[in-house]
Figure 1 (cartoon, rainbow, N blue to C red):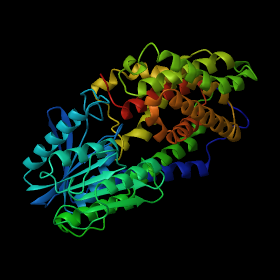
Figure 2: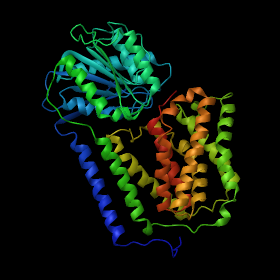
Figure 3: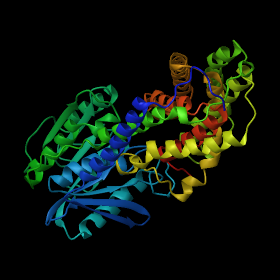
Figure 4: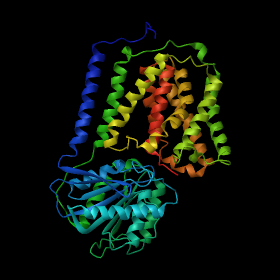
Amino acid sequence: MYQSANRPTMNAPRILLALAAFLLILLAWWFVFAAQEGLTTRHLIQDGVPMQFLFPSDGDDLPGVIVAHGFGGSRQLMLGYGHVLAHAGFGVLLLDFPGHGANATPFSRNSGDNLQQVIATARAVLLRQPEIAPGDVALLGHSLGSGAVMEAAIVNDMDYDATIAISPTDAPVTAVSPRNLLLLAGQFEPRFVANAQTLLAKAGGENSDFAAGTARLFVQVPHVEHITILFSPVSHAASRQWLERVFGVQRESSYQDVRIVWYLVHLGAWLVLLTAVSPLLPHDEPRSRSRRTPLHWLGLLIAPPLASGILRLLEQFIRTDNLANILVGSTLGIWFFIFGAIWLLVGFRPPRLTFSGAFWGIMLFGLLWFAFGALAQFVWLPWLLIPARLLRWPALAATAFPWLLAAATAQAGGGFWRRLGWWLWQSLFIGGGLFLLINLIPSLGILILILPLFPVVFAILAIANAAIDKPWAYAIGGSLFFGWMLLAYFPLTG
């Protein structure tokens, strides 16, 4: 640890900034849980399927809605619809498909029958809830879940009064099945917009005959794509209004789900707090000999395409998903390991590990874990990992270690503009390498939907690195956090 004459010290503005950030953190927790006022949550499990039943506390004889998530999703990711519909007088059952969230059953890309069994199980559980009106059930699903709910409503057309398909995949819809079909797609997901329009045409075009069950409508949700559509007030309102036209208005509600906004406030406040108190945190003295100038730039340039090419060759001999049984996530982890190892070997001579580096690495992981994930568990991401995921955590975390050690060594001792530059170049080169990987291995196409999130994650890590400027601490804490994050999102597979 060293003290530089240019290094900032704690002063009154920093103390006030830290206090303001702490206050925002408390407010965020309060507002997220205030959204549940007047609602009751019941956690259920049947045949290994974790479910969450959300309904108005004084509710009785309620129409029921089964909510199904998409690939890599969970019941937490669909909670926006749960809150909006429950406040409007519906009983909402959210579920985790196999391999997703807290469901330990392995997921398979060819698991259509399993998804149908899960929806059938959810319907049986929903109808057993004393608050639900017998026979009044609707379905709502996103992406992978949209195909599953449309299929269920077509095969069992008299069991479901309405179906809402968000970012819809394909299904054999007709002019009469499924009953009362609403299609939603985001303005910035053109493939799903086109698919929704095709489905609408197959289903007979727009129709408002709810009594006959042949009502059809497509709504393009403005200014959103495949993930942000799930947090859009327009998407929530369209779903609520459609169900109210099917079942009638249950109760007047002006509730809008803005919990994701408070989650972002919470995350931002933690990063501000960390920056404000950074003078109190340890910094290693930067060593110019740690960087092989200019090879550290060359390594960042060549490592991403090389990693994509090597992984493409590996896929000829082994299925990289099977190495840790995390669909897509395992392959992504191996890509980061190859990329990081090349960049580290070409460009750096990292400093030696010290006890202080290891200790602060664990502390950094704890801070990132809480700042990013603790509130996410109640808003959008299943952050509390089940044992089947925890067992894979050390291996997946290790894959990110070389990359983060290289990145930390490159930024060591740097000021704001230097760190901004490294964040920008990593975002560009890593993004380009992953885009190449998607083209080389089409089965990883799902990554294209989450590529925009990587620069955000890199920014969070960069801010943490600026506050605790110790390369080994950043590599240890960051890799433990990155591995945990991959495990929280991607499905378990057999």
